[in-house]
Length: 303
Image (cartoon, rainbow, N blue to C red; front, side, top):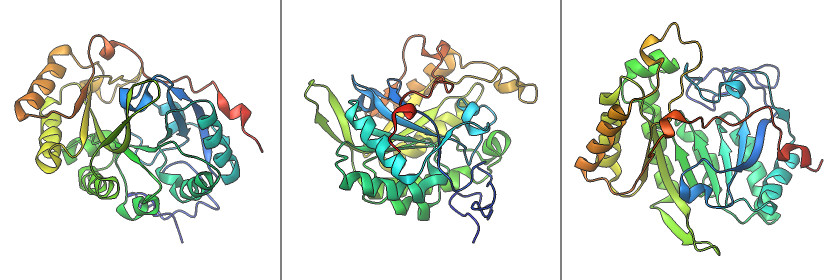
């Protein structure tokens, strides 16, 4: 049977080829590190134990991780090596295990998480995704993931078709968020030994404001607030970074302006949203793209 893990339903036999995601059944990891650029309650002072998986089932034209989403880079790992990587990150002081773009490897990740927990993995597990998910695939993770960190990129099917080749994005992503909330419930926080308050369980939905599309951002935020009120956190980001060449998409070939971002934040405040993260200062001018040429802890994994 071909692969149907994501909404693409490409039905490719990934044991003998590569799916729309660009990956075979063999797990590939492009980077593993202590990452400081997540929301404060995820990164903390020690960093989130991020595992960046190669490939992607969405492949947006503006992808900030395009080096690994569409390129042929990454280290192939067995499930046992993935277990050892999770435990290594915990030993390094990671606040959590942060699975970045994991959708197309969900069955292998679920098995590795079960083994890791049996071997002493005790920190929270974060599932960090584009939001373009199949509910049936997410159910493989029920009881294994503590924190869901999905995007809700678009409300408009026209925009998701143009920039992500996914006119059905909102349909699938909204159902995915509902399943995530069903699994982990309302946000739960706890104090670390350092005194900082970290998320232990819950859902943070990310939305990145795009240049020229304030109206769509407002629709996304209104939908989330109307549906979940304070049962989730919303992270409103201004860090959109266009690729160097965007000849076919001139309307999004620039950064988000401060005025555009302020309009979205002001709207969220008007709605009465309290559980939110915002980015302040010059974050729109900074780069949040990791160096995927550095293997970091991948070199230390036990075979």
